[in-house]
Length: 422
Image (cartoon, rainbow, N blue to C red; front, side, top):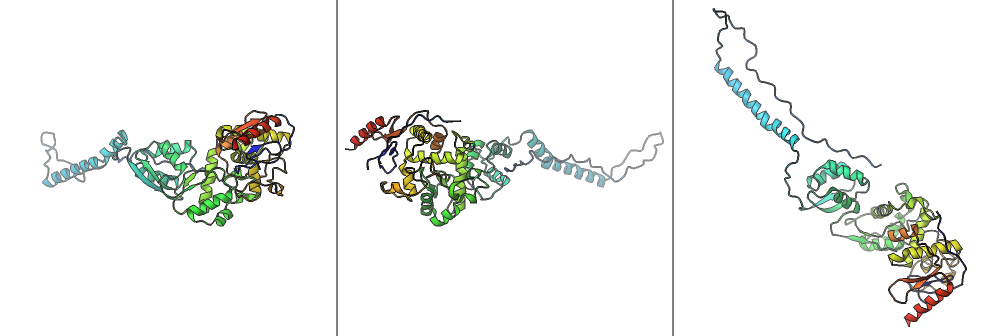
C-alpha cells in the first residue's frame, strides 16, 4: 500500500506510513457550531510581656511619730531594707533586657535582618500527606520562604492547595513565593528516577513504560487505571468509555521518587491533565461535541500529525468529514482496533469488526486512542476555518501535509508524494 495520505475513502494515513484505497465522496465545507481547605497563618509578631510592677520595700506603711515641732520624724533606713531594694532594681533590669526590649524591637522591625544569606541552594523533602502548615514550616525552617503569610496567600491565589506534590526539591533561600508554589505544583525537581510518557502513547504503552521504570507489573497498573477509581475526584472522567483512562494520562516527564505506587503515578498524570486543560473551557464542550468527544478527537489529531502548527488544519478536515457523514479513515484508529503493533495496515485490518474501525463506521471512535498533547486538545477546540476534506504528506519530506478541498486535487498531491519516494 502507498504511504501516508488522507482521502475520501482512503484519505487517512497512519504513523506507520500506509496508504489505502479511495472512494470519491461529495461534500461541502463544515461550519462549526456553536475543598480546598483554607490555610491559616500563625499570628504575626511576638507576645508582649506586661511591664513589671514596681517593687515596694517593706510590708506595710509605717506610722511615724509626730515631731515636736509639728513635722514627722526622719526615717532611718535599715541595712536589710537597702539590700532588698537593690535586689528588686536588679530584677526589674533583668526583666527589661530579657523580655520587654526584644519584644518591642521585634514589633518595630520584624525580620529586619536575615540570619541566612539569600540565594543559597537548599534541598527539602515534602512528606506524603503533609498538611499546609507542615509544608509552610518545612519551607520556613529551610529559609526557602521568609514570611509564611505571603506563602499562604500565594497558595490560595494560585489555587494550589490540592495540587502540591510530595517529594524531594531543590530551592534557593528566600526564593520568590510564586516560583516556590509553582515548583511544588510541577513536582519534585531533584534528579533521580524519572518517568517519561510521550505524546500519543496508549494506556497499554504507558503501563509498559511504568513497568520498565519502576518495576510495577503492567497488569497491576492497568488494573488500577480505571476511571471509576478516580471519577469522584476528577469529574472530567465522567462518562469515560469502557471505564478507561485512555486519553487522560497526560504525557510528560515525571519525577515521583524511587518507589511510587501505581495509584500515585496515575494521580500525578490526572493532576497534570487537570492543570494543562484548566483554562481551555474543555468541560463545557465545543463545536457540538462533549468534553469526552473533544478528547477523543484530539487523540486522533495527535496521531495524524506531529506538527503543532498544522493540527488546527487536521482538525478542520475531521470536522468537515463528520459534517458530511464521510468515514474518517484514520489508520491509527485501525491499529488501535487490532491491538497495536507497528506493521502496515492491511486490507484484512480494514475488515476488523470494531467500533474503532473508522473505515467501516462513520463518526468518531467511541473513546480516545492515545494521550493527546494540549496542542491537539486546543486544535480540537479551535479548528481552522477551511473546506478541506483531504490531506497527504508533503513531497518535501518535512513531516508536513498538503491539504485539499477536491478529490482531484488530492490525487495530484498524492501523486507528487509517491513520486518523491522513488
